[in-house]
Amino acid sequence: MSYFAAAVVRGPKGWAAAEVDLSGAADIEEVADRLRDVDDEAEISVMFVESDDAYLVILRLDEGEDLRVFGSDAAFAEESRLGALLLGDIEEPVLEIEDVAVDIEPEEDVDEDEEDEAELPAAPGDADPVGDADLLADLGIASHALMELCTQEGMLPADITAAIAARMGCADEIEEIREG
Image (cartoon, rainbow, N blue to C red; front, side):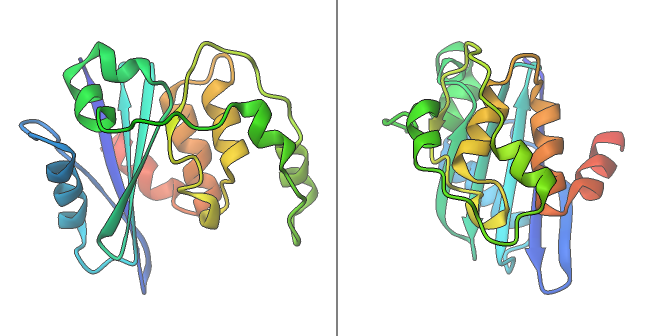
């Protein structure tokens, strides 16, 4: 199983990124430690783990604490050791996309392009997202938008990561790691 793991960390000088090696990690806490090691003083640390062009897991730490995890598909935990490592402790699935979309309220200061994106209906897809869909809400990716990206037909994990990174303002940092 091949994977790509990139961490982006935000500190006083903006975003920085680093590739993360997850080989040999024994549990989710060890993965969180590797995320902390990228910059142990970062305000926000986010890791994107893409696996086999099929699965995406997003991990987040705020000031090195309170690990939050979201997975694009619960099946990842059953299909690989890495999936079980990252998603094995998640017990509750996220809300169904239809449930999330009902509670959407327009945000202030949203430009028309963002508004159009938020109103797109979700493609049915076979994905079964799990975890904390709100983990990036304060960074410009509301839970419904994250769910829509993960359930959209034809979207690869790299595409989802790129879309999220663009909204967060760290797309160049992720792309530099991917090309490196």
